[in-house]
Length: 178
Image 1 (cartoon, helix red, strand yellow):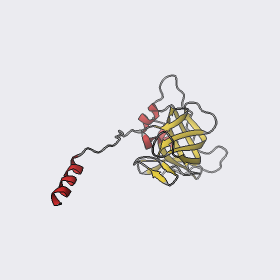
Image 2 (cartoon, helix red, strand yellow):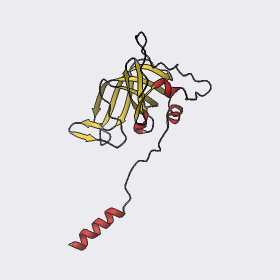
Image 3 (cartoon, one colour):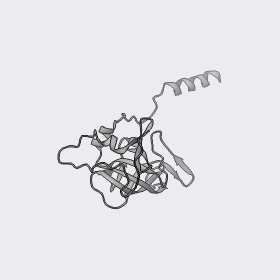
Image 4 (cartoon, helix red, strand yellow):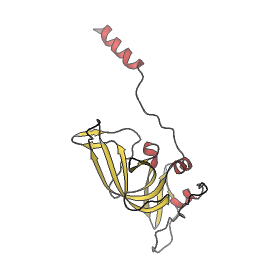
């Protein structure tokens, strides 16, 4: 019995694991690889189990606050693998866990009539508005969105909506990003 147990353990440790490897992307690579870059608020998250495959798929509906690259009108529909439906929860490390009401900065590419985040979960960054300043979570801290956008190089023929960290019509002086 010990030999069988040891043999099973040895096989488990030597078999290759199935995994998806995604190379890290800096902000410029995320921007360059995206067709749509938008600051948006999560309006709803809906998950279901498709009949044609195992697992769970989620559709996130977002209300655009500001389109920074590309063109889009109306709600933004983002689809991703993973979620919870019919008692089954499927998840993978790196997926972004969208919460209704939160603001996010999206880096998206088209896929089947909807959008998907570039680089699995790397295409979604948490965002917030504090003291009339729009900020995004980047490298361990909150940064003003316009500070991040200044360095983006926009390919010829594309337009970048001018950065606007402050809320139109708001009063007061924006606080510096921490």
